[in-house]
Image (cartoon, rainbow, N blue to C red; front, top):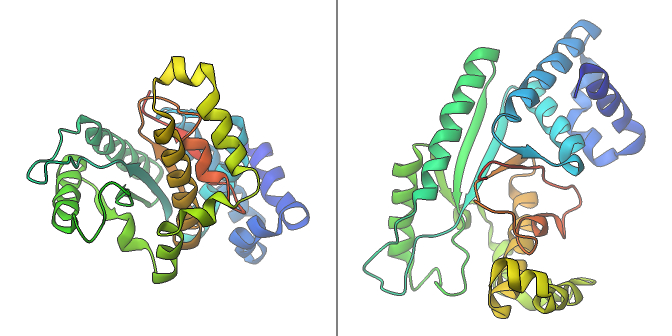
Length: 261
């Protein structure tokens, strides 16, 4: 990615992508010298982010826009989603060495921010929407899990349910609304019946269904409440029935940088 690419993407939004143009329309108030400086910094930021992980081609455009928007507004916003450490034994939390990855990322982002003289906000989000551990029944353990994540990650930490508004819970509590989305049932069936999935991931069919519904739900909530963030994914493997489904029901795809493997 170079300045020419960034310029082409940003200047083309007015004609080709009205939703994304809304994020950067302040550019119209800037002088060309300021715009060129932002283009240059966008390239530098993305170049440094490549050192964190893999950026698939499908996400490059939106990542470029969000980085540029962050520079334009004064703060680039980034998150990592974290699975829980709960167990059926309510008295214990499972060991989660994966939480340490948040700390590594945070330190790396702090270096980028210092080197480029920019502001980057990084938040570790605990995905506390799990049908096996209802929020009301496991409230105390979810709070302990948040404290555990916060300590291990060394970052600003939030539970996903704390970011949500009341209307968001209707999606979480009614998975049939998600299943009614065009083609989703067929996709779930495809993954459940795939021999490659069974061999490569050795996961129960019910787990695949649960994960797809969960990731679609989270993707919708993130677009509603954190529309200007991108994800630094810390999972140790790419799961075709997980990460891609963040974007299944979104108007604007959230860029994902795969940092865990």
